[in-house]
Length: 267
Image (cartoon, rainbow, N blue to C red; front, side, top):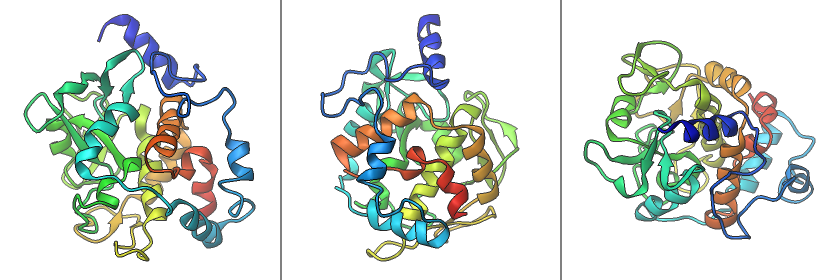
């Protein structure tokens, strides 16, 4: 990655930019300067404000389950918008690797990027069918090989370094993402646990404090995910992604990007 692009990406990761430089979005999608957590509190989140615990989780579920669903095939093109490299509109940023790769290199071959299910689709066995299998709030571009290494492992600390993806670690039953996206991963997993509560033909997804969840609709390790949410607050890229998914695709939001403190309020 050329030095100017690295500098631009680091600035965004630190939240130095209010909007994403180099990302061209329709006017209806581009976030406004002060956008809106307060405005969403008065409108979108109005029924959840002031609640905690199970009452908050229930209220948020009722809000975010109202979404427009897309097909698994449509996810390819959506990710080219939601995860566009702010320094190069021809590329996407890979979640774990953190590198920039051509949008055209989507596929299943070595050197390609594919569609990573952050909540592993085998944890609840929902596959790639329209619903949790195609929910953009937990789907991200990732290198085919690195995606295969993550596989369906739970998230936890430790393990051996992942070759070709600096800052990531893995062992037999867990995967630790790089520091810059630890909070992103936590908020994606916990979004899924609130959105899918078993009342719309899909499994009731829940976080737990274990690894080796297998095909159970569980994902861990909750105590570590909570730490990561605190350690890595939402940055400009993550906030913009939430806005694009809401405005352009699904019409629902990840509440933990808008209100990271709600993680502790529920769990």
